[in-house]
Image 1 (cartoon, rainbow, N blue to C red):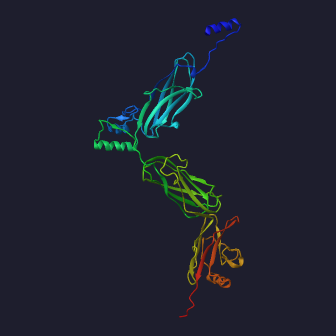
Image 2: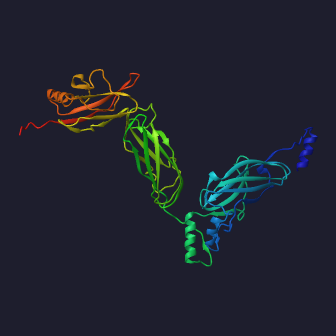
Image 3: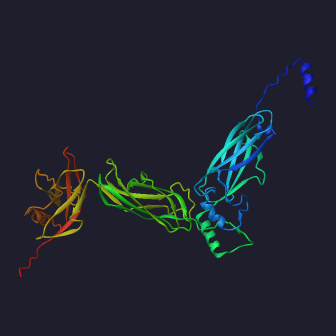
Length: 427
């Protein structure tokens, strides 16, 4: 039929020009998957049943360098032959299944051009991060991965087994007990409750931090589930309580492996940047922030710390609501990293808005470099109790003003205190 059509075309004066053509793969029946070769094999049988003569084979596989183990790299090579007289462009897919579930991230999909009567070898490496029964198969598609041309035939897939810690423990138990089933033991992966990662505690010290002071964080992470979990990522962030959506990352510590019931402690240190707003902050710790680990409970992965107060001046003594004795010792102490000169203010105005309701120590233009002050005789309780009598108040307040060499000033927070007067009894 083709010859008749060709004669008609020539007789009609139409010139027919035949050129070498790159045919699409679905036009060629001459493709063949030659083999699938693994870099690591094992005494365990290479087959879908994963049946072994004794659990001793499982234990030996852990020590045998030729056996694939958890965390190893398994190299897979397949060969695709083109028996046609023209080159063919194909898509090659290496499928990886573990315990009958396809792991697309571990597979391969890539386009190759195979020359006529030639063989292309495809090499792919697999990270054995998941224990279990592996099945490797190959598909050849058209170049756009729209149509399957050939597939690994049944029985030509490759199988191998990566033993988990639990598999080894069960094999040891079976060896010790000597239990046999028809002369063979069949490996079936044990089913455990999934892991459950949660924070036992998130602690931060000091609770009142100075700008520039180092925060010390202790975070206790626990696996409260029933199975081991590997490659655990965490994220530690801080935020201003008034701006909870603006979180900044402090650290992203990780854990290689955690057994059921195990607790891992992270000890971190951090200094909040100098440009942070003063005020109240919290630390939030999140485990598995990208939700990549299957857990028993998914909603308990985050925990918050105590509230941290950030300021430039920290009041130490007297503590809030402290009571002095009128005839006792009056001592004021504070701390600061940002300022070098200070004075305190004492009064009955809880907001220090009315200058007539409080006074400075030391008085006038004097400032002190110390971070504590013992009032002179007559300053306290005399001046303070005088204000209390005039304004009919029974509560006093104090704060510290800090000054830098540049002249910049800042105020501390405000604490309350009171003074117990000497008894008026003359006896």
